[in-house]
Length: 317
View 1: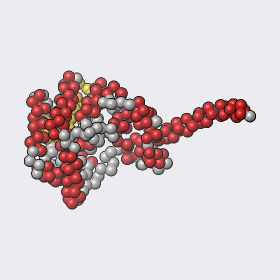
View 2: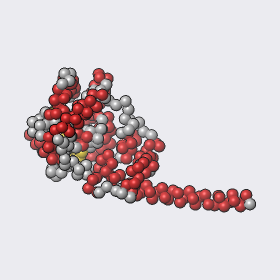
View 3: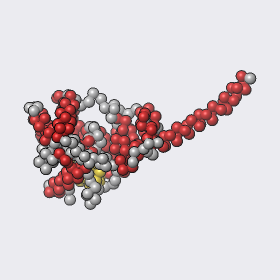
View 4: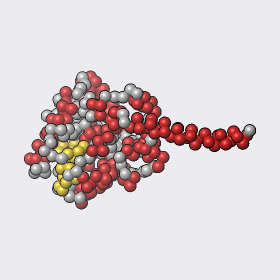
């Protein structure tokens, strides 16, 4: 009887395992077909990096939400920025996609307030998004199990988001600008900016952070120049509310502009466009979603301004 039961088990077990794998495959296929998956962290766009890019930007959310290229179809463009992206990931992206750039393409490199002396203890929470599109050789730290969990079989790490298989977001939400149409009241803006200032300053690592960030920016610029690209440093618009709060820190803007000066001392031909206090944007809160991110109306106006400034400087034909 035991032998019979064992034989039946050996016959049934492979079928059960096979059926389980089929079910896993179906759930996973369903999950990665959702609009939620495509919208998550705005990395779906990396499936559509064009060839012969003439104008692109790197950066964190300031670049991600600051540059809106839809009005400039005369150029091949791409926005490589991702929320909280740091310079070493910008460098990884440039290396991976260098063959997608046209000769003498302009690469906008945003320099943000938080990225001068600020450094996290680690970037483990942000790394999962890069498994979806970044090749192993460009990772700072790569793990096989994480690659499986976050890229190959992502429903395993979906958590409560697995319900999106049955209650998905609308397809228009894949576009990050779709919902960026609102702006804050002055009271809301004051509260947001104070919290943002405090959060950024909490992450500062002093001279250690300064030197690490400086080395990474210089590495980026050197890579651009060595590969026939034109890097341009940019600081995107910041509301007067947040600027006024930072102005109370007597050393902040000195340190910030010393950073820019040191970069340009090493690369004298690299221009810097500073829009952080630009009166066409900073006091016009209706152009911002919050204290430091433009909404879609601000992004359209800002991108038009940057393109015009690049053209006037002879950097963009």
